[in-house]
Length: 334
Image (cartoon, rainbow, N blue to C red; front, side, top):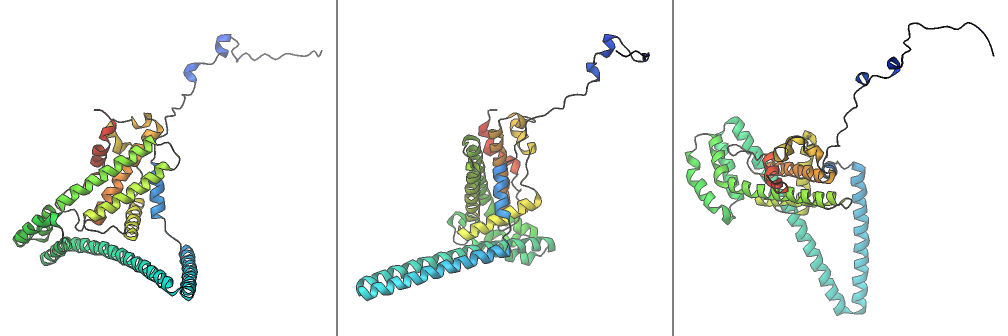
């Protein structure tokens, strides 16, 4: 055992009380709250619908469709010619069936082209209406209203509004008054019907997301409900529900929402319904249902703006928050 001098530090306290840690000097524990729902199902649907297809992918699918179509055509031709060589009557019957099938396919293509052309026509009318309002061009506004009347010429539910519009259109003194009159007489009824469709879709998406725990079920429900909602909104305003037209409409709506950042939603849309701060205390699944329903409401309002032949001038644009309150009020008891 070594012996030597011992060094004592007189500045260091040696009492037990001084060596014990002081709780008052400890750093506060960070508060970690529950993760807020983000509406992942609607985020996924928006990303899929708004995603741009690359040129390479377009060539791939186009060439693949051409190869498959050529193979089917050659196989059908060989089948029919071989059948005619064996049995002329049976071969003619099969030929007639194939011709009927091709005729139905051609009619479907024509219907899809008509649906897309009708959507383009409504978009053109809306653009002309905005131009007439900005320029204050009364003759241009009256031309726009005449186009709207022709668009709805075959609808019996708007017959009274068309008659009223034809009687009162020449009483308006400026472009805004003419378009406002058309909104009140022709579009107010359609706006109410479109809002009901949006509310129903938001309620359905919220219910499925909250109640069905299956993986990807919320994504499938959100996609089908939103596509059906946009198709119904387009039909209410005079569009035609074709598959390609509906997909084009969905891409236009979702691209607009993604570009404006409207696919992100938080407590600001749900707080008026259930109270501030409560969204983070709900179960994860239930909160996701509410947020997906709120995002569906935003998609529906955007679809109304795209499909409506006239912009909102006199009539108030529906509020996504108001739609959410009416659609999801049944989830809570006041």
